[in-house]
Length: 331
Ligand SMILES: [Zn+2]
Image: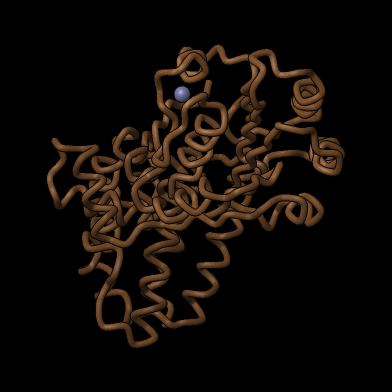
């Protein structure tokens, strides 16, 4: 079921106004931009708007028959295509369902809309099958593709869509929005969430749900203890048993970037305030070439993780921590 996004997010209001005031709509759109920027909310708000009987400038009316059907998750002319499981591929079967859907007449007599997310999850066969539908558009039928990584789409798919980039908000609007969403979280923690999310507000919200603040505190404490020799790498790997591996990899990657920036003369830590002492201590002790080696190693393992390779978690973390510890000793 589509999320019940009533409107696009406030930082996309200019893009929204420009889009809905077009005299003609393209039959396929590609909404792209960083993960957690609000592309899906934008696409579902646009889908709702396209299908609404009485759409206003700011969004669907939320009251007409079409809106009520959609809110109930039972609008027959709205189709959501996504992987069966997060991280898995969108297969050709799903695209065949899409092809059937667009070849039928709209059951409610209005427009038909497909939201496909994330578009880069389509495997080769699925992408080829979609291409045919893009080449032969059907009247009053709209395909809304959403993608974090549009470069991974077939160029022939990209070129048949109207591309609408949707970026991240500036720091203050992001903070304001997060404050409204998380009124019980204090400002320091909101700032940390937004930093961990690299400025993406929806990702910050997700991190809160994953209890990332507590995990982060545990990890930062652990890193400090490791560098002080108070805990061994195997022991620490064990203590981090419950910490999500993708978060860990993201954090080490972010700290490495900060170290590289410090090494190149940056005066302050931009995005990891809770690690400023550790990074400040390490920066003069570690060479750029060692940092680049380490960054390569991290990226390689990040890719393995993204490709769902079977990592032996304990062994992998031990290796990671051992490498991190010797970074400072390698100059
Ligand atoms: Zn409506």
